[in-house]
Length: 267
Image 1 (cartoon, rainbow, N blue to C red):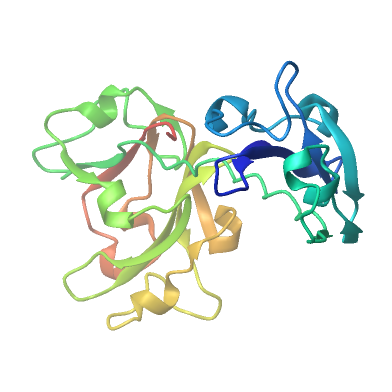
Image 2: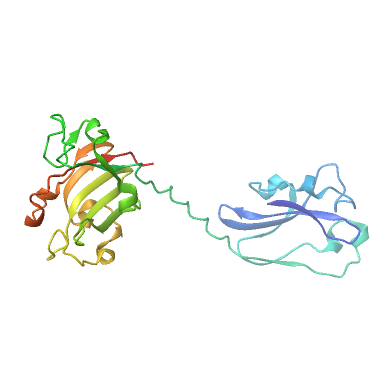
């Protein structure tokens, strides 16, 4: 920093350089301005003579290098600044310099979240998947029309799963309190959704009364870290999701509904 400032009651002023040069604290004085008396005369323009951040004391036109590196250094006295007005000033000046602070860390890039995504649910009675959607292998990418079909019920994944950048969320899905867990988030900035995210030695779907909060792991890097067995979709588009009838529990084996997941890109 090359800064000018008043140092006397009559408004006389000086300029100095104080900063870090190559990570080393550096302080210089007698930083003059060509064509001007020094110290600067009363009424000088402090703002105009303050150059702000400059690379070195040379760029501030300094004539006295006081100190480089931390420690205590002899600075200029008023009596030695070359102006008769201050030749009898008795004061002696020293400058104590501390080492430069490390640069502030670069902030991480903003975390991305999945765009507007939703489940598209065919009730299996009035709404039945068309031939182009009747592909039952979980994770198969199907035409977007399988998800946008107006006969289906849409449920927001963003609201239901409350995604952080990568979210492992447990939630109840049945009136009796049975529950499931899913992974929904951005992996390497790519929207990713997985289901059947199990817990070792625990029945799945989770039994009524399960502790959803305890089984919600929050931010985890990948579906594997959430215990997921079914990768439904990576990247935007419409994908076949798991049906209740195929989740391995006899209680839901006759459920007629068909589930699809529409994923939007991370943003």
